[in-house]
Image (cartoon, rainbow, N blue to C red; front, top):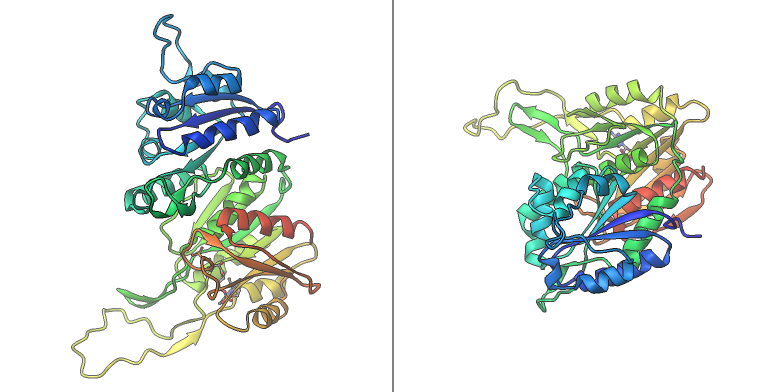
Length: 400
Ligand code: PMT
């Protein structure tokens, strides 16, 4: 039986050409046994008729606050309480912007604001709209509110242009919902420590040594663990992301030394630790207390000292039953380097990502990983959104 069977799902449809795919999504959800209430924006109705949608869902489609001829009021509050989840597919730039900023001027956004359950957002728009900083910022805001973004694909768009913006295929969206409902609270009662982002090692008051880590992989892991019932401590280097899941406690740090101190404190009490941060291996020996001036006659030489190895330090104090997971970011001899780190740092498992793989590693929304366990076994995964990579990592940790 499908995990969607008997589930109450609100399907939000906005005005975009991808609305035609919502019909297939609706069919798939209904076929899986879900009860689906369609809420469509006025613009959405220009792309797909309510008659088609109500026939398939066997429920009147909701679009306005009132039914004009009867004066019946449609309660977004009741809908929000009724739903086990809400999925907005396609989500246009306009609706994403309204959702991000609470502009409740239609039934769909009002219902979204009232929804008590998990919300999934499947954006669809032209590539330039998708790449616009305002769209990116709004999607990041939605993510930070705890919504799950079902990333659009790259491919041919309605405009004829080719790029990122095609709504994910209905089968895949249905699979994301299915996975969500079939997921047990398999981390319930577990405490998980996660590190994320870069560290910044001060040179002087205005400069630092750092790297390109955005924190996306580590934050996706924190969200995944929290959504599976864990109590998460996220030790984060300086990033521009935020997270608002009530089960995630964020400890902000700047340098490797600060990250080590926060990790040592949290590790003692943790069942699982995942070291996803890109920790700077070296820090300046001396930090200048004033800005180093260009006008000096000689080019300054910055002497470096080794930073503490956080994963290895935790590996040395690991007690029985604790699971310690590391990452390896490599540019060459990937497997050999990852295996060496796995053993040297006393890890139970290492997640290898290579800078040679397009779409993997720093800054991207996707990653491509191989997971190697201490028993020598290895599994290779394809390129996926970081949230899905996080789910694969957690699934594998649970097999240890
Ligand atoms: O943040 P994103 O932009 O999403 O990018 C994600 C990522 C590329 C940063 C992530 O997927 C990743 O690979 N993180 C580890 C990066 C790294 O520093 O790898 P490494 O091979 O240098 O380190 C090996 C392991 O030791 C890592 O678990 C690291 O956290 C840990 N380490 C390294 C150095 C150090 N001084 N202390 C450590 O604990």
